[in-house]
Length: 317
Image 1 (spheres, one colour):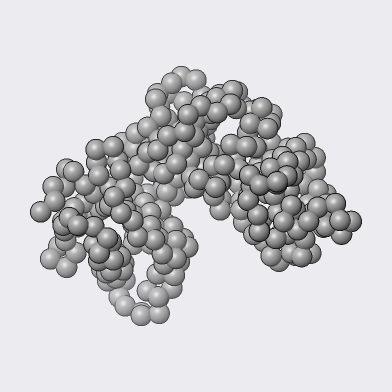
Image 2 (spheres, helix red, strand yellow):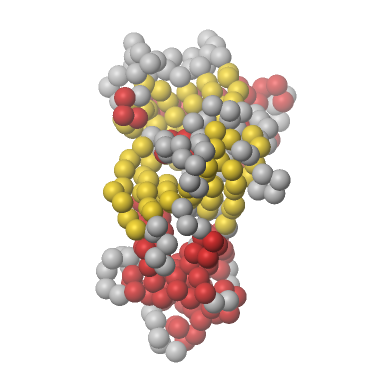
């Protein structure tokens, strides 16, 4: 049987996505993963439809997890029965396994004071489980990105550092003296999706091209410049006229509009921040944000690295 000190299961259960990984403790290497669109929102909707007693909710969610673990077992050659399971994301929210209170900032970036709930293994679910809650300020919240920050293993410093997690709702966490001390959320990708699919800009944008091909990066940088300095509500309409007056194709407009929104998001740190920056997220998003930060001369690249949370790039002024 596999030793629990050697491996563990890591589950990132988001609102609209699910990711389960088998991780080797040494080097935090991901050995196998299982992904699906079976996020907490869909699971919660099914839970409501079955109309079971509230005391059965944890067991219901663990059954869903068990089926995903069974899928993961088919991808590995070792036995993963009884290894510990760590769950982050929306699993600790009102639509998750159980609701846990947020940890109010500040919080230690080694994760030592995050709110957690231990669910002991049983004969029905043989995995000791740790459910991790999110963090909050008086006006903002996040779940899951705090575990990504822990995974970045940032060195403690009295100089302020900024952790950026690009995503559907980009999260910015300021870190000082080994603690997360402030938090801001930017709905950048939500705005992009809504404006690109639900308004007059829809016919002017087409996602069909490579960022590093042709002049796409140039148009992205053009958007970054305008977004970081001009009025977003006005410049967004230029996506329409770019296409209407044959200035940009719909494919080029995709990169221009991406840059416009990311540039506007970065305006705060472009004007107000002078510390080190760490990006953590999906490789494509890291590529966009790194290009934008470098174009605005906010940061210069240092070598990228992998950690238990995914892909990170550390940047400094």
